[in-house]
Length: 478
Image (cartoon, rainbow, N blue to C red):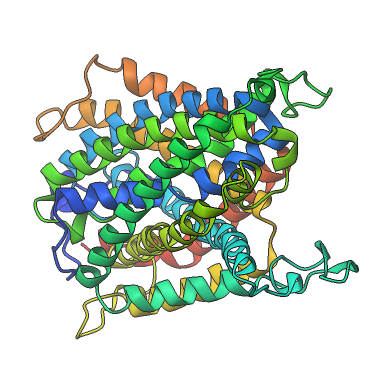
């Protein structure tokens, strides 16, 4: 007899689960959602941090490695999304293939991934906002732009410590208010912002390319300092781990299945389409960025694109690009905060969390309770925790989700061979296995403290599951 820990949710049940959300998103809106989340802090901020602290100019190679591993995972997501068009992403896929305990763990991990990811994006946004307003002669007090205990320099040259990151917290509350108005209205704003953001990326590449200095590419892979992850090949792999934060967007597309029209067809289109477009953009953009700005100058720079434009002495385009990037972050926060609430909604609908989180506003049909809860959590993280710490925490959560998704494909092919699949990963089990191995290799390269934070978070999740979830699961009642 199957124990409660390993009970699985039937594929048909996972696919047909109803949560009351309005199905308003078409394929192009899902592609825009994926691009909107993917092209954000990973491109505009962590590119510089990863280059300055880990990989040097070879951060471009890190993005290629991450793109290949994400490609394996993206194909697996495409098969599972067409088979189980549920809004729970990797949580729902694990529930149908590996059982309730694994599903709970990955669902709890996704909550960490999206929560910390949104805080990272908001922290990066704060840096660009300060740069934009500073160029207009409206400086923000540096003590309100960084987490506590961070050293900052005041306008009179005095060095002191920061208080908290106020703009980051405000950004999260503004986007939360937008989401609480309804998905249809929010999606229109998101699509418009994505168009602006892609135009900004194109402008940066075109105007900065003539200012690339080949000397900045030497050495392409700086010599390792003697510490694992600090340059050398281990640094390239460590930066690839951080780069996984940048590819979070296509995972979030799968959380919007129950907001989508014909999710079995549209979700794979959204996932694979956004992944292909963003991979090309990341490689080209990182190559130009590290060619314009020496990687040593970007180790702690939250707004390297602004630095690149200033280095290239392009004042006529600086304000335009900074304004575009600042507004473009709205789409990243939109996707991450949407994903958070949808994961909690599905887990609550399955009985693993209190029904409070499945309750929808009668007018907007949005989960207000979850949105408000995550607005509080993410704003506190964004205001109080450094961006480098947040970025690594997001990456390890993303990698764990990708591994579970890749492993679910062969499991479901064995246990549910006749279930309809709108899309099938080619090559048998080769690509899923490569996805597990490549994501695992990058995951191992992350630092020990990041692993400790993940383990502590998962232990907290286990306590909640054994206290509440295992007894209240719908599978226990059915």
